[in-house]
Length: 108
Image (cartoon, rainbow, N blue to C red):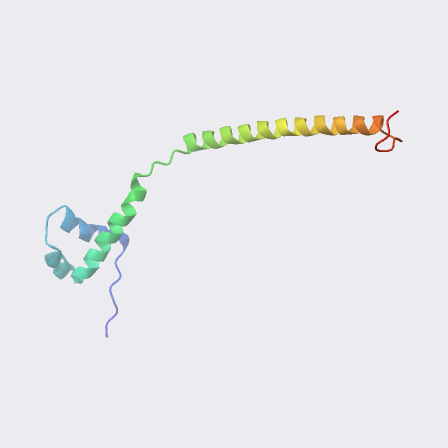
């Protein structure tokens, strides 16, 4: 038995281009390149399933700025919460000092 031919992605695109752009039939292109027509159908399916990634716009300048803005908002919120906690801790400390030595339920 002979070894199977391995096609690079560039070769697959070139073969599919003959079908999709040049209008040749699947069977004639398959015969010309020694590939089973089902393999061409599989390649075409993979091509179109992966094509959505081509149209996704990745703009690092925009997404980076958005991430920085979100991080800044979270830092500000954390600082506000820290201030509230510090105020509450100060109030608790003052109340403890006022009630030091007193027993619960008795007032002076």
